[in-house]
Image 1 (cartoon, rainbow over the protein chains, first blue to last red):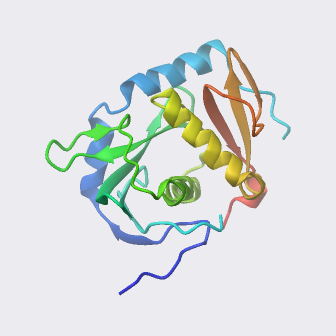
Image 2: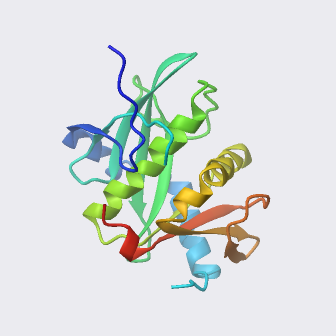
Length: 50
Length: 152
């Protein structure tokens, strides 16, 4: 059966699976996170309009 | 966003999401992971293909499954769930490759007017943040939610 289109801003959640949370402890994307931390440290944050 | 999105499976922490890209190369599981940074309420978005055999994530693979617009819209939509469940105000994303960063830029550009209803988007050029502009190449992106518009 074809799934109905979801054009809402939020996605349709079909299931909660606690097993997915194990990925948080695997050190994934470490290089990107290190880079993000470096940017935040050296560049800081933009001057927000709000 | 008016673009169709894939349904997602969500972890109990609301920081990990999985969905299945369905396109010309078949069904490809994708993972979206929000990781904490050193700054409070500031998360890094990681996203890539899930290898069902090794359980690893490849964020450099070019899938070319013909559904990149829907995939990016799904990734972006997870921000609304994360933001609802946390007092999260920011996230930052950098592409694992220049091609992926470009893909992010195109995704943001194609939906900018709608995105800006809810968030402010900034791009990193060298060592400076500047407001997102469609034609500018950026090294990374930073998103600030507009609190008053982000409760749906």
